Image 1 (cartoon, helix red, strand yellow):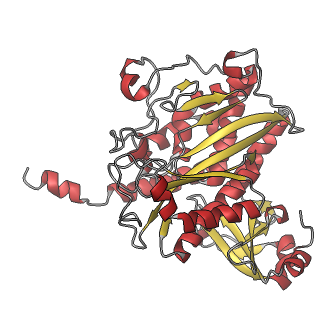
Image 2: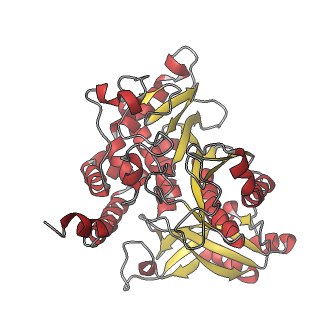
Image 3: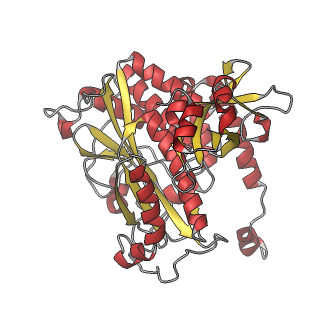
Length: 435
């Protein structure tokens, strides 16, 4: 962790720092700060008009200061004269409670009170499109079952290998890259880490992937469902909880079902208990619900859940336990805010630990073909409005995430929904013109 960023800049040849923060809608906002001025920014922050981004602030609010976290610094591998810094938002000396990184920091502190340290890994899926975004960038990528297509991944070798080389150089321990289940879709993986570090890396990865794709004349999108009939982009989260020393996995118990300890089951129970509400954050856009409530895709499966169920090593459920001491939440999608996604997982799981929540019955069936036989398991929300209503009803989860954040998020997302329903679509003309 560099204590003196100006010294770091001199040693690394950095001319500018991107002092960056993420707003409520996942938008990344930044100011480009000369290296000579960076140490002042660490003390006072870079000034922003919060109202100009997706935060629930007005034009009359004071300056919002983005105070960079020196521990988060990443030198841009594709432009080494620039370094990126994740920042915490402050206004008049106080944390902006609705700012996503602050929300995550607060929830992490709550978990620490219980002696728990949450570690996560993410699996971001994305499409490589033409610059206009209307079709996949590779015209030969058109197989019915394109997942793991050897030829297709090699035709995009230049982009994928460049980003993977950068992750390896950054010490992220990248370990695999593949073509995913939709044409034009890919996934890249790196080692799990503490939740805050994973969120920072996830945020930077999206920035890096988009930048490198643009350099190669393409457009990378993390949109959950950019094409009807094709599998959507998820962002599966692998979750384990450790003692504060980070050495003992509190989820692992070889004597228990699937190797999941009692506290692990309780944490999972919290995820199951709050699933319909946390979907508003893990699946935060109108388009998100085209992925989790989609009909069968061209490849034969959506690979997305639509019911609140859990299982062993079975990818057709919302949660799977692929091995001892961890589980995978398959609900989040590519639009999930990197910080809020981690925060809501921890918040729901922590409530489960505190209340000793039971995750309920485990199902080992194929949910895509036998899901209709499951009785009593809640269906996930059908649309963003339903998800927002579920979140608003969940007083415990709202309190865990922070009342100020929850009010701001619900307000802006309801505005987004209102904008969507006021939009006149082609579908309306095609189905109603001759009524």
